Image (cartoon, rainbow, N blue to C red; front, side, top):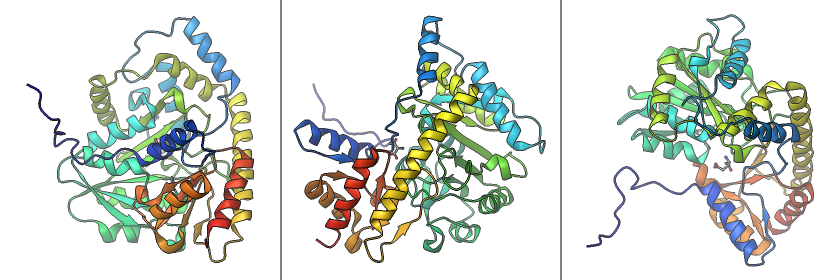
Length: 393
Ligand code: GLU
């Protein structure tokens, strides 16, 4: 006897990732012959640097085809721990490889962290706009996402005062993303320190997603919580290779967390995916340890992102009064849609102008839209001209 599928309560309210859905819709339209400029995907359009591809092939030839430790190969965890230790500048004990868990993308690291730290009835503060998957990850942990609207006067960033306003005795933590997806805003060291201090004082977990840290325009790198926190007992720091090194398909991310948290996350991962793909771990190891080649590659890519950002902003100045967050990192532009309806505007851009963007509803701010400029510069410029043209249409 066949039964209709009724989703279990675990997933009854889950929604597909809107960022991925937009990209797939763009691909589907292209497949039927429409010329679409895809500014939906948050994915660098560059090739993975050759030295990383070569290191991956070499690793495969050297036998990197079997399971590794669930939390990742030791040299990779050591390289990640060494970077964290350098940032701590002697403020506490060196970060050890036992405090690092390598996962299948920073998405899995974030999921492992939220699932391990938060549970039924817990409240987790999410600055909005926030990346789409945070809402669902908190929900999968059966915790409640509490949206904290960012301050329009500060590039939609939150402050301790704003976070306090939404805190209750059930608040267990917060998730922060700097540079921000979707706005590109960057928390400077003082802003970040104030939030870390608040979390420490209130006994909250701080999950700091730093996946875009190396993609910044007015500084060498965005400040990390590890640069500013007076201690790291309540901090889980997430990063990965996808964005900075154009390695989205390799699926390597990681968490640096207090040892007990790392052990729990590893136990969770041991029942879901086990280790991240072995050859990808060696690829990430090359990206993190062959620093001369890696730094040159990152510099080139960030330089190109900056040129695209500047070109895009230059074209968009033709729209009087455009409400836009001036981005200093990541590769997104975030602006308020005409008429204040981001979903309708995204649909209109796709249908009438052939441009795929992500409606701000995905990030908790339905009036806005997100444009990714991780696309060829000519396409970005073309798309911006079409946005200008369509603005008052
Ligand atoms: N993080 C990227 C984005 O926001 C990739 C897609 C996803 O995983 O959401 O577009």
